[in-house]
Length: 185
Length: 162
Image (cartoon, rainbow over all chains, first blue to last red):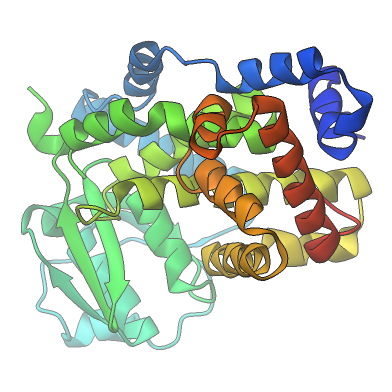
């Protein structure tokens, strides 16, 4: 059971029954709501939380840990498809297409390039892929994919990766490299 | 979106965004989280803001996110599982539609002065002091007008919740 704290309760009651409060009490509440924040300090906190100065190794460890956690929590045995040795293939090649024949079980991509992952995924959702930048094409990822989940879910998860931005527009998945990578020393 | 651009938007709009969030949530930490989440979303680079639309986008985002949090909070209190899925599945479009409905209600059911005050507070992020000066009334009068507006909105859209 969640309880409103006293300030919140007071605020709500002042909205519901302002006639029950003296002007001074309403003034005090307004002063509290309108007090100027320390924007510079807030920015520093934000910057510290969303720092882009992570090392590549740290980043991949974080990604691996995140997906390991998801897999453990789900308690599902994933059908792991090792594609590490899969050679770079042109979109639409026979081998990649063979993976896209309506997979229903979760698919585990283990160190697979984003190019290959999106080839499989896009075929499944009947979309096309456009890489606006070439670098993301070669990024290798460790992740699971639920073929019966909406494409938007997968895009959201991929967008959680630093340096990567994907969005869907007119049946095309656009992939962009964000500037975070370039900012790193 | 580039980090320098995010910093410019943050420095320019943070105070107003926080003000709107405080008015709706009355919780400092939650308000800061809402504003921070919006900038984090922009930092991930999925949204491009056209010149002249920045403040409108940011303040609308604050309102929508606060509205979403308030509804989630109420759902938790109610523990009405049957409603949970509906509310949690409320996507951005649903929230935007809801906000549009609220704005339309304000325009069609409230006095012109109440409409102006609502607009100044929630779409321009003005302080009570600024609204009082613009309307030529006391700050307490501003509070009472806004209270009346919010009560009317609650009654119209969510008599059991919010």
